[in-house]
Length: 143
Image (cartoon, helix red, strand yellow):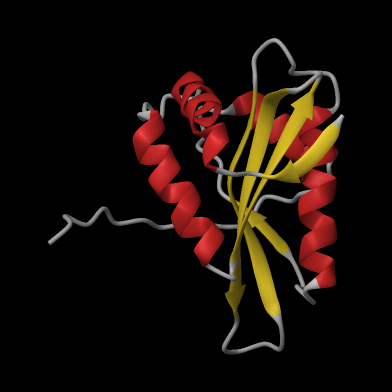
């Protein structure tokens, strides 16, 4: 298993993985977002590759804290192909994310996972993630 930096050549696979999680996208849209993430020093995209093909990815964002020293790391997406789930790939991606966050001086990891993603909750609980009290969201209309 190889975990590497993601690039625009991964757009097709990432679009498919996101589609499997009910986030339909086009490879072109994903390629644009990969370019934007690569240009942002506070974002990281790691891809898990097995036998020369991408089978999962994790995207991260490092966020400064105003009330506390240091930053925290938010996992925005963690996806593993359905045929590769259960093989430890998700845990390897999570381990890589935690290593990157620790190297950067982050004091915690954060992930938001919809209530319908019960299997993801079990995965994160096994990795010692604890449920946090409440997450509030408001959708905005782009201007």
